[in-house]
Image (cartoon, rainbow, N blue to C red; front, side):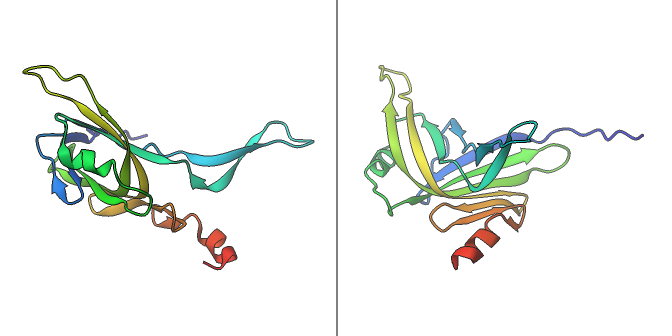
Length: 172
């Protein structure tokens, strides 16, 4: 039996972009969307244990970037309503052995929560915002791994359309 030794890929650096503007040096951290499939627990007579039935969708997606300032453009995004989502992009550099590879997470969304933390003289004024995500595309080294469009009914993972038969049955 052979064992492969590998160094894990580490996020060496990242940049955050909102509505096409880069916030280089102003965004120390970003909590990326947690992806959870919607399932329904099911058990019936004769079954030894419950099972989860895949409902063909994911739970609501959110991103939480933290900014090192009360950023004016971010605060303006708090005023957006449904249908006015803006592009928000996380670009990272992952490196294990060898050269860095790109990790790109493209979303559209709008700010639904805004927390301008304590403001104190001669200290950074941290601003955290909660962004609801309408579309999500995750790429690593140019390969699209996840592509979700909540309103459009698109849910592709690893190149496989998870909703193909559902959408075909609906005629969409």
